[in-house]
Image (cartoon, rainbow, N blue to C red; front, side, top):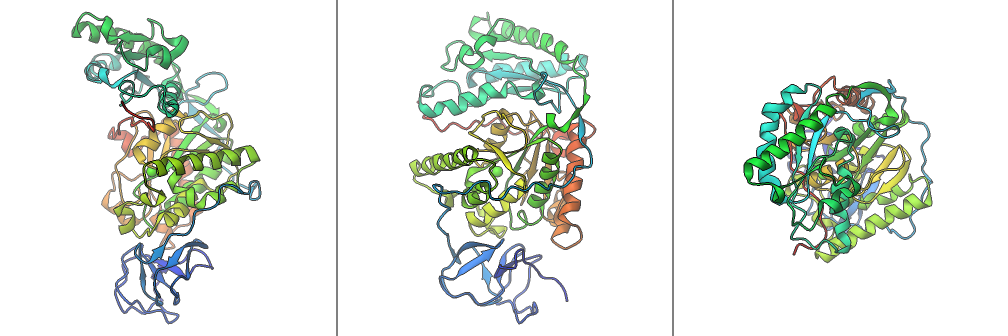
Length: 503
Ligand code: CA
């Protein structure tokens, strides 16, 4: 008999439609659809009484708002959200997996960056800024640097201006200002930038070059526009400094390094009901392989893990890590509360159209990309890691904010699950896209790097796609391959996370 639906856990009383199913279709076991079920949406496998629990992934997604009959469509209007997990008494260390899938290779070709630090996957000149006011001038200069200077330095992959919306007109001493400031400070040390520091400042901003760079605020590293005599002099000063930095970066060479020198990030966006069944578990499998070989993998997105946070807590290796996890969740709960919203504000119309009824369902799918590895550290937004392994880096779930936060934490490559489709990319690191459905790959064949869709139809396994993704990560990290986002230069802006007031 044809397989119409996908059930994940034996406890589940709902399943998702692999393709759209028409009304009145006999699905076997006495289940007949009561209406059309859109692709990826849930249908009831049994009668569920009003207030009865609805299970997917073996967990309660929510409670039925009215009686639901077997074969009925279940969507965002059918469920009441469960209470989020308690943060006070989270268990830790009770689900520590020590048998991870063995990585087929244990090295990659990277750019060393400091004796013990993580290595770069690219060799990029980053030009940092203290404030948005300098963006116009810097962009003109960068265009000329790319045209006139970059061709002379073939070992440098690109020039990236770090334009952002912070730096002035902000309450710089507000307690939460530490987040955007830390993000900009730590980004400087992203291994893809090779430790070369260049910054363009204005001269009267609140985020001074001193505050951003500390001891590295020297005439060799900083161009101050208010000290230049006119526009042409500004461009000349920036180009002269850029040429010196490019000459140094051009000497960098890739060498074979252990995977312990690789740090990557995982993120999803525009998720659908298949994300948690195909793409994210494949990413989780690749992540486990990387961790097994000594690499560091970060996953993030607070509102998308909040409802399954107890599952992350169980994997924390010690109490300190688990307490920090709870602290980050608590901080975000209150951040949302101050804005008079809660986590239910997360799912987008697209998520719901894709079959995700609520944040609980989205969270279960989202967590799947972290695999099963023990969680060795939790980072506040944009902090740098001190441990190797699977790390939870707390960030907003917003794609364009999570990406920059992870870059500041030091990722040199990101794996992105685009769900219903987003052409997202980062300027400072390659982004590999893994789609959840074969229709998505068919629609965007030249934007999706890996298709995890065949898992839904039983034509591939999570292990197969996960291993393929692992190999893709190594190839892209080693510079042997470009992802589509990199090839087309699809670069989202450096959107900073600033929870502090703007004045
Ligand atoms: Ca996201």
